[in-house]
Length: 279
Image 1 (cartoon, rainbow, N blue to C red):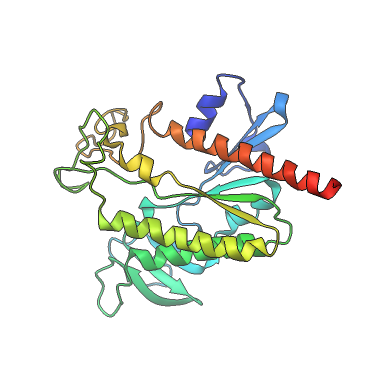
Image 2: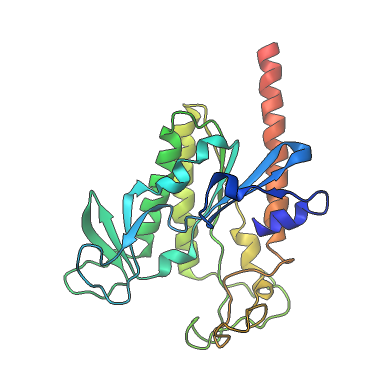
């Protein structure tokens, strides 16, 4: 989103209209007056409803969130019917210790290390969250937009884990011979793509389009694109390297090049449909 705003600024600057819609600083909107075009960022890192892990009165040390995997985050779902194109993504937040709820009941967790709670793994929660998000889009009565799944964004920690000295000091892309894909990346990618394909198949019978904005392979090749120890506030703990987020400008700009290509393609498809109707 930040990349897209920066790229568009080479042509025109938008008006920040966020406060006209909400006081929630996690939801931002910009209006491009000359083009009658609104860009919005609806921040919901888990896509589904969350609650404090100890909201039931129990205390789970080190666990910040409980995820209600069968209930969508209504904050974004209530806004989505207003848009023609929706880009949905989620990833790294699911590696945190999390509790999983379904039908209001605790069914398991990811890396919670709690007695008498089954560890269902990150992939269980990830799959169910995307399934719920896609099902919501399929069932929204007034939603007629095109949905893009932007695929998993990989981290590039080397020489240790993120909290154990890991960093990303490379200054050039991987060659294909150097590239080694960790199994967790394969699993995260395949999990969300499988759910997208299922949604696309169901959506086709309802006139809804679900597209794949596949950025994962391109970004796997760019370990040089992360801030590492740079670009952080002097008040932050810079002993931890940032090998998750991306530099701007940087490799992440290619996501919007892919997006532009796909939007043009959608326009061509829509034009073709109109010609068929006329004929």
